[in-house]
Amino acid sequence: MKIISILSAFIIVGTCSKPRYTARIQNLKDSIQIKDSATICNYANTITSQELKTYLYEFDSKEFQGRRAGEPGQKKAANYLKTYYTNKGIASPFGNSNYFQTIPETFFSDGIKASENVLAYIKGSEKPEEIVIISAHLDHLGVTEENEINYGADDDGSGTVALMEMAEAFHLAQKDGFGPKRSILFLHLTGEELGKKGSEFYTKHPVFPLENTVTNLNIDMIGRVDDRHKNNKNYLYIIGADRLSKELHYLSEKINNTFYHIELDYRFNAENDRNQYYNRSDHYNFAVKNIPVIFYFNGEHEDYHLPSDTPDKIEYELLEKRTKFIFATAWQIANQDKKLALDIDNELLN
Ligand SMILES: [Zn+2]
Image (cartoon, rainbow, N blue to C red; front, side, top):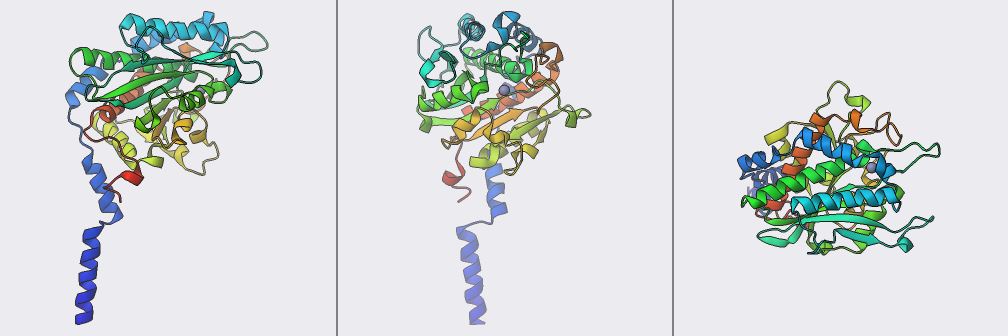
C-alpha cells in the first residue's frame, strides 16, 4: 500500500512537471492564435493572378537574356526590381535609393563577374529589429550554347513576382495603418544557380543581425504542376518547416487550414529523401545559421532548366493561391505577439 502511494505520487509529480509529448504539441498548436483573419484576407486579396502574370512577362523579357549572374541581362533584371520598388514607394533597407547589396567578383570563381542581391524593406511598427525574410532568386542560367534563352519563368520568375506582389500587399496594409509589427525584408538573391552564392554572401554579410532574423521563407518554383499532381493541382511541397521550429510547422498548417486548404505535401521533407532539396536552394544558408526556414516548391517538371521554362506555361491561378498562402504565413509570423521560437528555446516543448 505504502509502495503504491509513493509510486502514484511519483507519477503525479512526473506528470505535472512535464506534460506528455502529445500534450506539449497540443499546447503548442493551441498557442498559435490568428487574431486578424479579416485583415489578412483583405490584403492577401490584393495579390492577383493578373498582376503576377503582367510582372512575370516583364521579368522574363528577352532583354534579360536568361539573367545569368554578373551578365548584362541580370543587371537589367536587378534594375527592373529596383524600379518597381522605387515606383511603388517601397523602401530600401539602406535608407536611400540604393537597393543593391553588391557581391564582388572575388566572391565568385570561374570568371563570374560582380553581381547584386536586390533588397526591399518594410519597417516593423513595434519590433522593427526583428526581421522576417522572404526570398527568391533573381538569377537564372543565361543563354545556351545554341544561343537559346533560358527564361526561367518558373525558376525562379514565379518566386520573384510572388515577392513583388507580397511587398505591395504589405505596403498597402502599412499605408492603411495595418503595417507589420516586425520588419520584413524582401530579398531577391543572385547567384543561386551558381551554388547559392547570393544567400551565402548575405548570411556572411547580413544587413540585419542574423540573431534577430526570425525566419526565412524561401520560394523557388511555385508556378507549375509536377507529374505526381496532374490530377490534383492544389498542392505545394513544404520542406524544412519542422526542422528547427515545430511552431513554424504548425503555424504554417494553421494558416493553410484557416484560409487556403492547399494540400501541403511533405514527402521531400524526409531527412533521407534522395533529392535533398532541403540543402539545394537559398534557405539552406539560413538554416545552417540556426534560422527556421520554409522552402516552398512545386517540384520539377519537363521544362526544368530548359529554354522551354516560359511564362505561358505558368498556372497563374495556382501561383496566386500559393502566394497568398505564403503572404498570410509571413503576416502571422510578423504580427503574432511572441517571436517565433526555436524548439530548443520553446518553453511549451521543453
Ligand atoms: Zn531555382
